[in-house]
Image 1: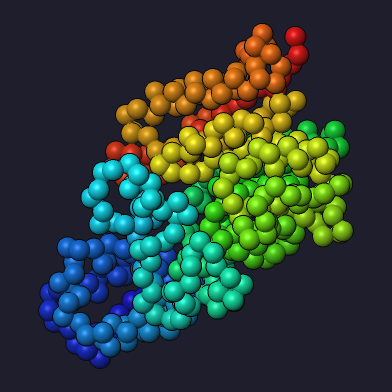
Image 2 (image 1 turned 90 degrees about the vertical axis):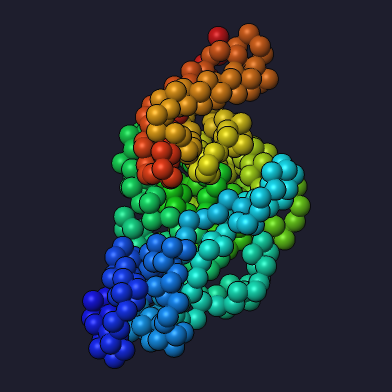
Length: 397
C-alpha cells in the first residue's frame, strides 16, 4: 500500500492538505480477502468528501490501479455496515412502511466498487438466475482453515464474526454432541436458521457434526454457500424457492443424508423463509434421514427473537441441546437482557412440551444460560452478544 501511494504521489505531486489527509487515511485499516481489497469505509465518510472532491476520476482510478498492482489483488472496493432498511433516507415511522423497507436479506446496499469488474449490478437480488451467478464476481477467503465464498456486490461478509466461528470449533457443547453421536452411532446434526454463506455452519461441519440444515432468503448467499462447501469438499443439497411451494419432499428421502448416492451430503439448505423449518425437520426425522438435532444457530441482528420458537421446535427433545442466540444488547444491560431471553425461551419450551406431552409435563425441560459471548461492538454502547442457551432433554414422568 505504501508503495502504491508513493508511486501515485510521485506522478501527481499532491500538495493540498485535504489530498494528503486522504492518502494517509486509505493506508489504515484496509483488509484483503482473496483477490479483493476493501478500503475502510471511514475514508469516504461525509465529513471527508472535500478531501476527494479535488481529485479527478482518472486520478482516483490510477491510484486504485496502483493499489491493486502493489497489493497483488484484482479488485478494490469499499463498503459500509449492512443497513437494516433498503431506504436509508426514509423518515417514515409507520410500522407497515418500515416492514416494506426492511432489508430482510441483508444485502450489502452500501458496497461501492472502485477497481475491477464486479459483475452486473442490475439483476434481481431476491431471484438471481444461474446466468447471474455465472456473470458475478466471487471471492474466496480462508479463515480457521475453512474456505468461504461470496459475491461482495450481493452478499454480506462480516469479518467481525471470525472469533465466533473459531469458538464453535472448540465449544464443549458441540464437541460433546459430536462425541455422543460417535458413541451411539447416530451422529448429530445442527440447524442454522440464518445460514448465510455458511459462516457458522461450516465450523459445525469442520468439528465433526454430520449434517447441517440451513435456511436463508438470499439466493446469492445460498449460492456462495454452495461454492464454499464444494471448496471444502462437502456435498450440499440446495432447495431453491423456484423448486416448488415447499410442500413436497424434502432433501434426503429415505436413508441417511450423508450416505446419499455416495455424494457425501453434509449440508441441506433451503432458499426460503425459515418459518417452514419445523415442518421440514420433522419430515426429515420421519424419513430417518437426519441425525439428532443438538444445536440450533439463531444468527440475526439486531434480534433473532422471531426464530426462537422454531429453534425450540427443531431441537431433538430426546437429547440435551443448545440454542446459540445472537442479540444486540446495551452494554450496561447484558446480564439483565440475557436473563429475559432465557425466561422467554423457557416459556416457549414449556408451551411446546405441554402441547406434545400434556400440561402436567410442561416444566420437565430446564433452560439456562451456559455462556454469554460478548462478540463485538455493534454501535456505541451496544454489544453484539451470543447467548449459549442450554435446553435439557425431555424425561417422561
